[in-house]
Image (cartoon, rainbow, N blue to C red; front, side, top):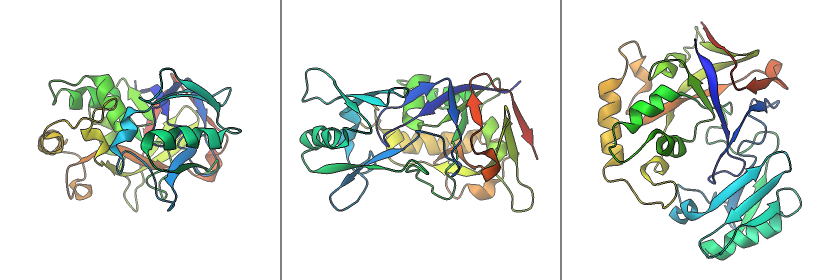
Length: 260
């Protein structure tokens, strides 16, 4: 029986995530607190793992209930604790000092800062998929792969690539019911350079993308709609939710059903 095994939120885009027991759906379809904040340079461009490799060296721990972040860079002997709402300039100053250029913290409590603004719902993957993909790389375990892929909802009790059945067709959308929350799959998530890097050091795994693409193509289930795979550097599923789901809650242990 499929069930909700993990919920991971990333309160500041590109920094470490936090595992939670439950999370609420916003009116936008995004998860509350997920990518609520993002780091920007003075030109208004994202400062993230795609553009700035040093960001992998920053460690962060979030206290969702108290709205605080424990932040530590390699330049600091111990972490500093900041309030996410009242000490944003101080957070930006600490990050700027480490990165070597001025940054600011942006906030969007309605939508957050998802990579795909047309599909701001939680990204979905199964634990079995992460385990399988980790096995393609001898030096990586499932937790390392989890931190590289950075999905929100992890499904247990299913085989690898179970989530690939969630891609919606224009006339036949595939809905996923998690507890009492309904969402529908949109497309497989295109990966960027971030999964190729060690999430702690930023060191690039040799030939990561080449190995990934070869293995993803070889293990793609034969029932998957291959039209979504113009290339095979894709993993996890982007989703959308309707306004009717606003305020509902995802909870660890929720049963999961697919409704075509």
